[in-house]
Length: 397
Image (tube, rainbow, N blue to C red):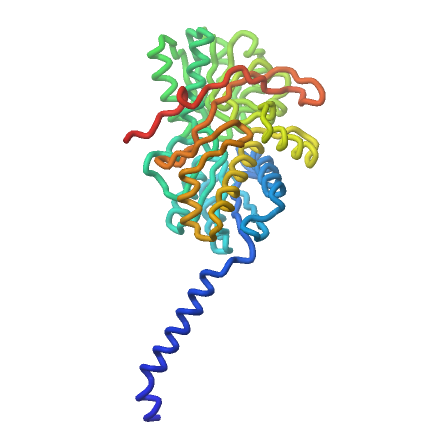
C-alpha cells in the first residue's frame, strides 16, 4: 500500500500520457464513412422541391463512385416540413449521429435556423435553394456557403424585366414571409424610382389556398403587370386561380422565382407566358450539364428541375473541394471552399467569394412556353442571361 502511494504520481503520469496518445490517435483516424445530413422540405409549402434536391444529390454522389477521400458517402435525409423548428431538431439529431456536413434547407427561415446550429458546432453547411440575402452577408457565418441564387440577384432581374417591358402600373402579390417581403420592398422602391406606379399590393399568408379576392382586385385594377413574390405551392395556387379569369391574357405576370418546369407542370396551360428568374436550366449547353442531364434522364426518365440541378451542382462542387484537400479536417474544407472556383459548373463558371460565401454566377431569366416531346408540356425558354457584375453587389472593403 505504501509503495502504491509513493508511486501514484508516476503511475498517473503514465496513464495520462497513454490516454492522450490513444485520444489523439482515435481523433486523427479516418472515419469509416463520410456522413452528410440532408434537411429538405418533403412536405409543406415547399415540399415540391425536396425530392428533386435529393435526386440531384444522388447523381452527384453516384458520378464519383459513391466515395470521397476513399471512403463511402452516406447521406441521411430528414423532412423539415418547411418549418424552422423541425429543421433545428433534425439538424441537431443528424449532427449527433455523426454528420460531417449539413445540406439544406429549402425555406430561408429553416436555413437561417440551421446556420445558428452549424456555427456553434463548427459543421460545414451547404445551401443550394434558400435565397434570402441574409444567408450570405459580408463577414457572416464561417461555416455556411451558398452555391445558388440570392433573392437580390433575382429581384434585380425582375426589375430589369419590368423596365424592358415598359410596364407602367404593377400590382404586387407577396407571400407573407420575411424574405419575400424584403424582396418586394426593394422592388417597390426601385420600381417607383423608375417611374412605375404600384397600384396595389397584397400579402397573403404563407401556404394560402384561396387567392380569388386578390385575383378579382387585380382584374379590376388598371395594372399592366403583376409581380408575384412567391414560390412553391403558393405560386402554383395563385397562377391556377389567375388562369381561371385569363389574367395572363391582359397583363404580364412575372416574379423573381415564380416559375420553372416543376411549377409550370402544376399550373398547366395558365403558366404559358409567365416570366421568372430561373436558378438552373437543363438547356444550358456545356459539357458538364450535358453529362448531368443524360445521367438524370437515364435514372429518373425526366429532365432535371431547377432544384435538382442546383443541388447536383453544389454537392459536386463541395465534394470535389473536399477531395482536393486530402484531409478530414473540416476547417481545411471550409478554408478551401471559401476560395474555390467552379469552372465546370453545369451553369457555367461560378466563383465563391470568401467575403460572404456566396457564389457569383450568371443569372437566367425565362418565359414559360409550350413544349414538345421529349420535353415537358410546359418549359422555360431562357430569354436573357445576366452576367454576375450586373446582378451582384460586391462586398464592401
